[in-house]
Length: 162
Image 1 (tube, rainbow, N blue to C red):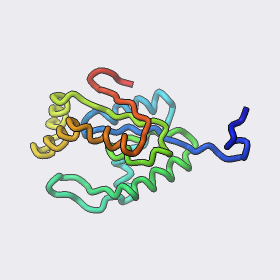
Image 2 (spheres, helix red, strand yellow):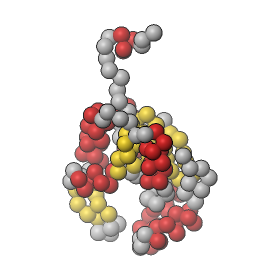
Image 3 (cartoon, rainbow, N blue to C red):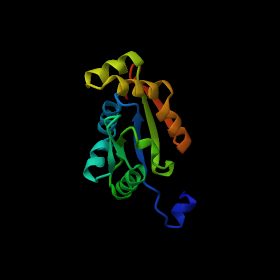
Image 4 (cartoon, rainbow, N blue to C red):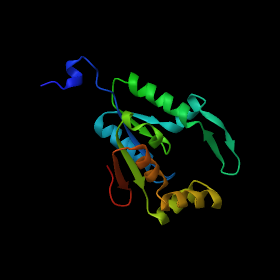
């Protein structure tokens, strides 16, 4: 039996799966594994920021790009609407995507000692490492994803890999 929306000829809204979490927590590994398993298209938010010029400048203190999240969301929503396949969106800003476009939100967590080691290996300075460890301690991505209203599953890279 068709649902009410289908009986009126309405298309079901396309949705993506998003993978967010602190820098260095393991988002890309999880997202790529998930895309492979589901035969979905992997989307790297960092690449989109460069490709579409979504950076509104550079924060010298934090040594990172300042991303216009509204512009990023517009690009992601357009991609979701146009895609013929399911999208797996990887990026620590992906959880700002409105919940109506998201099937599921995976928040990737990592043991603090392991996270610190990963960030040091990337050559991050002490202040940048501290900022990212604080974000992990205070569950910044998880809390922001909750505020948006996502269906969330937490993945601890020390305990479980998708």
